[in-house]
Structures are given as structure tokens and as C-alpha cells.
Image 1 (cartoon, rainbow over the protein chains, first blue to last red):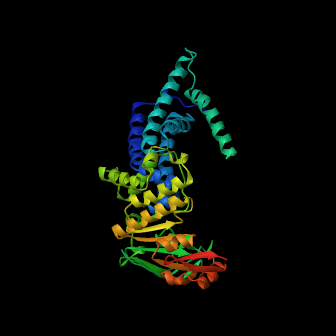
Image 2 (cartoon, rainbow over the protein chains, first blue to last red):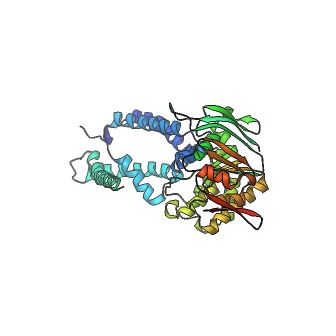
Image 3 (tube, one colour):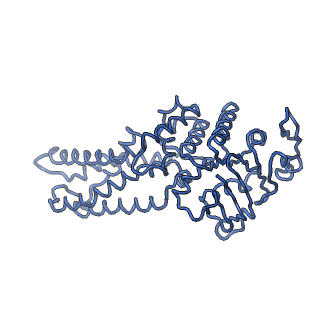
Amino acid sequence: MTFGDLSRITWDNLILIAVVSLPVLIYFIYNRWNYNAIDAGIDTASSLGVNVNRHIIVGMVLSSLIAALIVSLMGVIGFVGLLAPHMVRRVVGSDHRFVIPASALVGALILLVSDTMARTIISPLVLPVGVITAFMGGPLFLAILIRGYRK
Amino acid sequence: MKLKVRDVEFAYKNSKAVLEDIQMNVEANEVLTILGPNGVGKTTLLKCINGLLKVRNGTIMIDGEALRSMNRVEVAKRIGYVPQRADVSQITVFDSVLLGRKPHITWDVSKKDIKIAKDVINRLGLNELRLKYINEISGGELQKVQIARALVQEPKVLLLDEPTSSLDLCNQHHIMSTLVDVVRRKDLTAIMTLHDINLALRYSDKFIMLKEGTVFAAGGHEVITSENIEAVYDLPVNVANYMGRPIIIPL
């Protein structure tokens, strides 16, 4: 497996990513009340007029799409998508009105900080940024796994 | 708002019918209670009425309009549903109640939505809890939140599945009288399931007794007789009269 690297990106790629991910982000933010309703239970959500199955499937397809696009252009930089929402939920609760935009911002911040660390920690050598994110995300992943077993 | 249930039959895929030949008529300004033992299909019937489950046969009409011809949001504007159980997440009581406005929201909640939520929260006595997370409140408080959410939805028909199961004596009567009061003031139709027949006798106008997946008896207070209850619940009871109200006493 090769680690992803931010320096691979070109301006053309960045434009492509923005064109795809911005509308998807707006779609997710637009649906924030639907996701809150789904959190309250499938029956409750359906009785509030939410098409639960459609939202789950469309949500999965769109998130797969942006993940696939970005990975294919930059390579694998793992765990950011796991870290950011978990950190955000700890602070703002599970209201999707705040979770979705905050996750996007915190995810971007994690990547920026990790990349800066990867470039400076043992400079002049440059570590792949995926090493740093895996270093932070691995323990969290295990913690979630263990908590899941306890339940 | 008038609700008519005609010849409704429901079955899960490839199995025998759970509900058969269900007839029901509820007018505006009426509270109807579905009685019957555990597992007889009371919850299933409520879910059929609001379209969560698709009936195999029969029709459900709301004010002359068939439920089948409406989409989900149209149904949600007319019918509010309080399930027996709800999932909780880390969201405040206020936001959870405000969620009831979902069918009326396009991009975001309006000032009017927030005012409606505030009014209902005050009326149900949830004001002190409004900033608490719903995964940190008690079962009874959560039940009140769910009822508040259904009221905020401003439906014409309210379906309540065991709305008092987690409530203490005082709250049972507070919630039931609040519900009846809302039904009378706004000309709603309420259909609920209750296990406490005495509570049902006090607050509802009509009854339907289910036995083996079909209607055993239907009508006003007169159907609550010791014979009917014994036939449906398989338990001998006395129906006493206390200050003009029938009271069920299991023998």
C-alpha cells in the first residue's frame, strides 16, 4: 500500500474535487433535519415524512463518490473521516445541523496539521501524511471497537 | 378530521394475516382507545393507519381522502405518531421537540416553528429540561418529549402507542388530560393503545377491543363489560361503578 500525499495534487485536480464535493456537502447540510429524524428512530422518522431508506442509500453513494474521487487523486490518507466526526460529536453533541459543517472543518484542520507535522517533524525528510493520521486514528479505532464489544 | 378504516387486512410477507376485517370510524373531537392483550396487533394497527406498514387489503380514509394516494410528507402533515420506543442521541430536548416540525420545514425552521415548540414544551411542563440532552433524561421524561414532538407536528390525527407506559400516576393524568384538551380545542382525532383500562375509561370516548387479530367489540363505554373483558383478556373481572364511572377490578 502506498500512503497518500498532498503534494501530488494539481490545481486542475483541486478544481475537480471542489466541483464534486461542494454540491455533496450542500446536499448533506440540506438534509440535516432528515438525519436528526433518523437518529430518533426509523418509525419516528417515517412518521415525520422522511424516506429513511432513500436517505441512507443516497448518503452512502454520495460519500463513497467523494471518497473514491479524492483517494484516486491523492492516494490513501486514512482515519481522517473517522477522527473528525468523533471529535466533533464529543463537543457539539449529535445534532447534524452542527455535526456536518463542523466535521468538514475539523477534518480539513486535522489534515492540515498532520501534513505540516509530516513535513517538519524530521525535516529535511518528509513523512507521508498518512503515517501521522494513522498514528492518531488507530488508537481511536481500537477504542471504538472495544466500546462496541462492551455494548 | 374524520378517519375511516374499512376491511383492513395486514400480514407480514408470506405468512398468515395478523389483522383481518378491521373496521373503525373516528370523528373529529374524539378519542378512541384500542384495547386487547399483548401481541394481538394493536401496534400493527396503528402502524397501518399511518402507512408505516402497507395493508394487504382494505382502505384507510382521512376526511374522504385515501391514505394510499398521499405521499409520505402529506401523511406526516395529517398524522402524528408516538411510538412505544424511540432511539436517543445527544440532542437537546428543545431540538428534539422542534424536530416535530420536520414535515413543515423546507430549508430551516422559522420563528413560527420555534414558537409552536416553545408553547408545547411549556404546556407539557418540559421547560426546565429544554436544554438537557435526551440521552440523559428519564424514561418518563423521554415519553413526554415524544408526545410533545407529535403535538408540535400539528397533525389532525394523533396516534399514540402506550403514551403513558413510563409515566407516574400524576404524569399519566397530566398527559392524558392535556391530550384530551388539545383534541377538544383543535378538533383533532386521537387513537391510542392503553393497557390501563381504567385510564382509558376516564379519558376516551370510544373503544375497540381486539381479539385474535380482529375487532371483538366496538363502541362507547357500554362495551366495557365484564363479559367482554373476560373474553378478550381471559381474566375474570368485576366492573364496578364509582361516582358514575365504570371501574375495572380484576378478580
